Amino acid sequence: MANTAATLATTPPSVPLTWTNETRGDVLVIACQGSFSLNNHQRLDALFRLIEADRAPKIVLDLYQVVYVDSVGIGTVAMIFKHALATVKKIVLVPNGFVRKALATASLDRVIPLAIHAEDALRKLHTNGK
Image 1 (cartoon, rainbow, N blue to C red):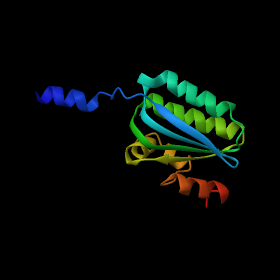
Image 2: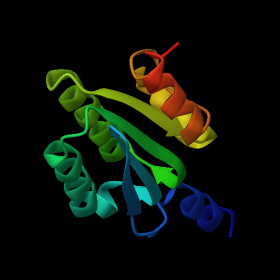
Image 3: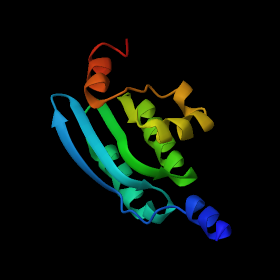
């Protein structure tokens, strides 16, 4: 029984990845829910394409409702950040505690601006991150 519990704890939840997006002035705000993982790689690709195609110069990627993240999810966050830098877009992430820990493990918390909630992220984008 203990072996099954350990397996369940490390098995990613089969929760679909969904998001809502809206434009607030010059900011694309995307609020994600679900699992940022290999199980949802097609949805992660679609999310990246959405960000890539949008012309907004600023992005808030709200991951507060993400329930699981694996290396594929972290890789997608890194790709999104790299794309933002390459296209001179500003981006701020809104992670929950779990996502923040995963970002720290990959040292992405040192390079990607983080906020505690979406309104804080919007404020940071409009005050150059200060």
